[in-house]
Image (cartoon, rainbow, N blue to C red; front, top):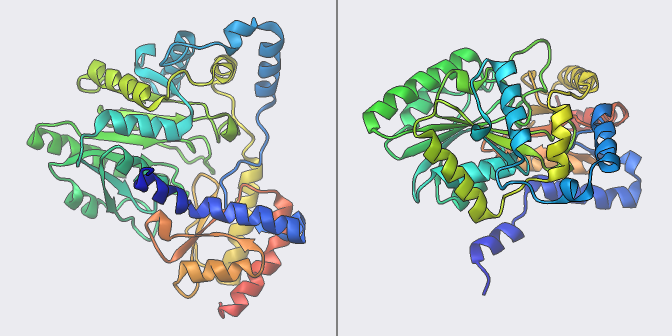
Length: 395
C-alpha cells in the first residue's frame, strides 16, 4: 500500500498543470494558433546570448569529468563564492560562500529551508494570494500553514491580520515579492513593519522566527520599481532564489539558498540546510549550470517584451470592463472574475479556448490569473475572445 497522502497529491494535481496539459491536447485538436494558453508561468523570452555562448564554451573546452562530475554537496565552492560576492555588490551585504547552498531552483530552495527550520506542528505564515505549492511544501515538512490576507487595493500584506496571526508556534513567514500571482511588490514600509514586529515577538517568545524570501521574479519589475532586499531589514532571513525567470532557464532548475550572515546561530542553521538537502536528496545542483553561472550571474533577459505584453493586455482588459490592479513585477495579471465565481468563469473561458487559472488554489477565490509570458501575437489574437467573454457577463 503506497503512502496515501502522496497518492492524494498525485491524483489531485496542480490546477495550473492540469490546464496546461488540457491546452496541449486542445492544440492538437484545433491548432496551436487557435488556443490562447495563459496558464503556465513559462518564460517566452530566450535566455541571454551569453548564457548559450558560455554553455557551448564549457562543453567544448572543459574536461568532461570536471563538467559532468559531482560538485560538493552544497555546490561548487567557486560558484558559492561568486554568488555571495554578487549579492554583496548588489545589496551591500557581507555574505560569504559559507552562507550559500546551490539548489535545483526555488522549489528545492524552499523545500530544503522548510525542512531545515520546522519541527512538527510549527506554523508558517503565508500571504494570500500565494503560489499554491507553498501549502504542499510546508505540510510535507511537518508544518502548519496559517494564511494572512492582502489589501485588495494593491495586494500588499494586511499588517493587522499578520500581527494577529503571529504566535508562539510561528517559526517562519514566506514573502514572495514580486508576487505570483498578483505581480505586487512588497514595499520597504511594509517590510520594515513586518520585520520590526517579528523582532519584538522573537524576544517575547524566546525563539527565532525566520523570513523565507522567495525571489524567482526579483529581476522582473517595471517602471523603475525597486524590490527591497529582505536581509537588509531582518537578520533571520533565508533568500530562496532561482534563475528560471531572470535567465529564462526554468527547465534547467538552478538556484540557491542564501542565509543571512548575521542570522542567529548561523552555523547551526546552515548545517540544518545541508542536513535537509541530504535527507531530501537535493545535493550537488546541476554542475554544468553551476559553472555557467560563473560567467552569467548578473545577466538578465530583455524584459521589454513582457512589459509590452503587460501594457497591451492590461489596457485592453480594463477597457472591456474587467477589474485588475496593475502589476509592478513578474508576468501575471490577477483579475477579478466577473460574476464572482472564479472556477465557473474560467470554465466558461475554455469554451473560447482561453486558458486562464482560477484563483481559489492561490488562497483568494474570486479572481483569475493570466500569465502574459506568451507571444505578443497570442495576446493580440486572444483579445476578441476576451471581448466576447466580457459581453457574456455584461461588462
